[in-house]
Length: 504
Image 1 (cartoon, rainbow, N blue to C red):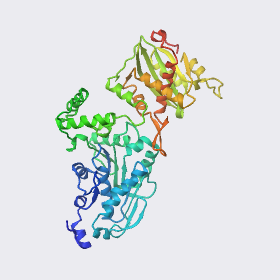
Image 2 (image 1 turned 60 degrees about the vertical axis):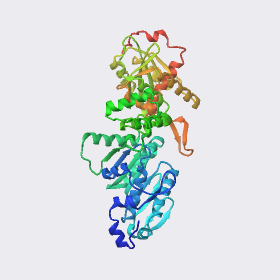
Image 3 (image 1 turned 90 degrees about the vertical axis):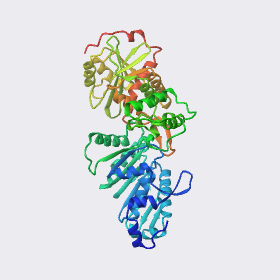
Image 4 (image 1 turned 45 degrees about the horizontal axis):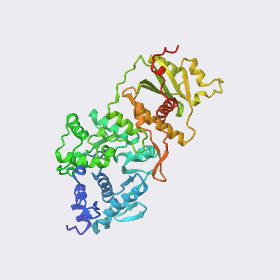
């Protein structure tokens, strides 16, 4: 390709941004070879559909990070006073993005274009431009706390939210707010569970999309790209054996969503799923809902909840009036109290109800129990139910028993990490035998799916200790009950027989 020799010719011939993105920028492909970047079918579709604020739920290897960062680079080179910011998941990711997706494409531009928009300042992961790009800059980092941006790209926001919820919140309240109204934001990620800042943005954008509401420049537009839309994701089906569970999965996609997969796509999926296993739905989702079904990294109970869902054990679980209802309690963070309602039938454990509230006294929770109308058995409380109030001199246990919540069995709280982990193992064993009411216990199910290990930012790995967040209260209530039941050699026959309700 020949390039114009002077500035006026360059500006005239290269005024179309889409043409520039398809003809000017060099990148390194997966094999490390220098290639001219051209938009693939998904990038081209996204360019046509993108909005001011964009949130992308994606499958792997669709090239959105590359496209968005080249879009930012192009916008800064060809426009004055355009500040672009790119936020990466980790410091090494930031370095890689700057080196591969900003520095390399810029350095391989025609000399005439670099002369028109020269880099006048280069610092760590930071370019400032002169000439035609006077006042424009790009910075790649793991956060953005000051200044005003015209374009912001947040890469792998789902992973940031899953491992560093405090950082994700800071990005939401800081970096996103640093982008002026009417400018552009790109948030892209694979899914990481049904909670956190990324999930909240996706959920809000999907609701707007489903409502058919007209978007304004403060609304996020939702974009989803499924693996099966990629023409490269196919494989010769000869010799590929499809397991029964995937036969059923493919038929469900067809019957429920109208997604018809040919033999080549089914063969590709079978081979990829064999390697990725439980990560498949997160990395290569077929639908947007499916993307959030994958187990969150570091989750203690995610695999078990997923298995219960597959087995059909998350469903309507009715109250059996011939069995007593035992309760598991947590008197938790920020004065939050959680109650799990639990019945036992032989080897079946049934979680029939759940309640959470904060800022209320024991009289409120006594009314909640009475209003449910259940016949109660044992109430399992954490050991601090024995603590005395400085104001009344009474223990919470005596107050609760005076309101008819009895008998109460205090459970000693774990004193160290080993006891916490032992309690978590008790919960795992208990959950494996459970049926859980999907509607009444929706918050509990979400909390158990989300309860996970704390992330060690310095070491880049998960700690052994649990992360204390919104999911901790419900998970701790479950642990109270699991430890309480485990402390008994067996569930006594009397616990499985009717008992008269307490006198409320």
